[in-house]
Length: 272
Image 1 (cartoon, rainbow, N blue to C red):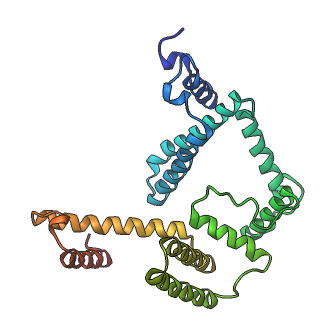
Image 2 (image 1 turned 30 degrees about the vertical axis):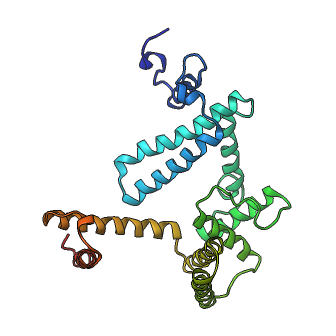
Image 3 (image 1 turned 180 degrees about the vertical axis):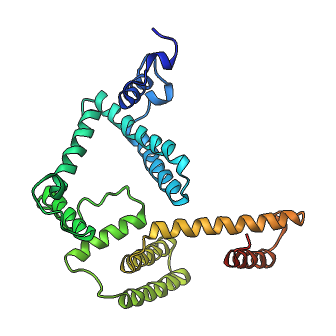
């Protein structure tokens, strides 16, 4: 048997090469001890994490990093497919055939006889109509994946409900509901149990997700941007404190708040 990976797994077919590497990693006798013991449940969190890392690279427009992150995400597909193949469930070829068939069926205006004279918005409506037809008789909220980030899932649930008319007509009603939920949260903080506080906080977040939908804002993207802004500004605070020979735990709220405002002003004036 060849001694090196380059000898064993040639570059002739990139996807087949990756599949053979995954098979070796999972081989009970020759593979990696960590890879061998993994299951669908243990790998699923990594799949979600890799998808988020792809989104992070795109948000940062760090294009040289994108091939590596997309490769990490592709590995997740191959990993799940290999485990399924071992269990006799399906193969990577089944995965590829399924998505290929789906794309053909979902784009009759490209691969069929329907007119291409439609907007992207109309195609979104048609896509959802085809999905519903594929699902067959089902409840309105069926099929919204439980594993989605909570804010994203909230928006998807609300979109589904809105399609059958269960929706506020404008942002005014959503804002009024948000004020109501904030009042209930304050009351819960002062009078109720930890579990009830958690429930009221969840209700407030759910309404905020609804507001994002009405304002055509992606709440996950908005929060990621705010996280990045907070990180950027707090690191400026650390830099300025370091110049003064201090660390954050040697400072106090008043000093750090003043530095925060300085960082905020710096960004607005483009002095950074």
